Image (cartoon, rainbow, N blue to C red):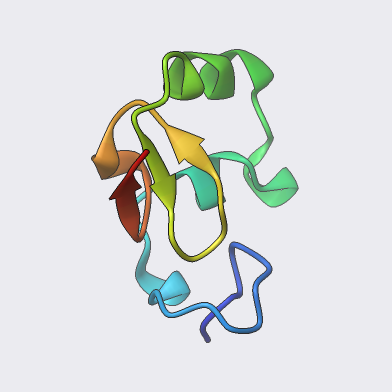
Length: 68
């Protein structure tokens, strides 16, 4: 169901089929939120997710990456 991982009801990504390296999964309490891993992924952000607004250095870590 869209929005299941990122918490956005208007989410356009397929949250039921998201790789474990995506920010919406990495930041999920259910996945054992690891702040050190998140810090590594968001250091020097280059992209923002057009779905949930999270940022990351690599577009591979976002469902709907857009350049910052």
